[in-house]
Length: 76
Image (cartoon, rainbow, N blue to C red; front, side, top):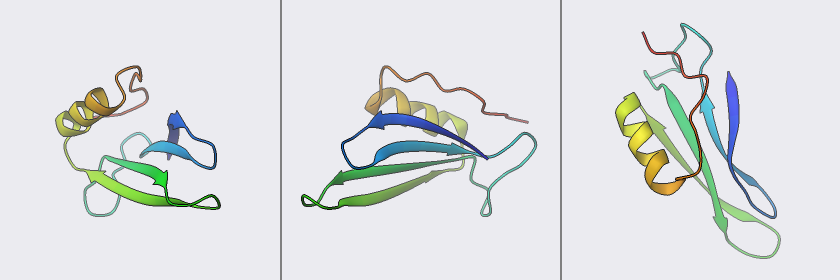
């Protein structure tokens, strides 16, 4: 499993999680994005988005994180 930081926040970081080479997450997911939004001074609200197609993952990343370059995604 590979983890990349999409955006650094004060409490938590937004993450892109991808499976290792020739692997897929349970349910057929090729990528998981964990985003954290401000809830209060002590904690953030976690939102998890899962992707089954590389095209939708790439579109979402380019729209919400334009400076981020996707690396280490293995597609068969």
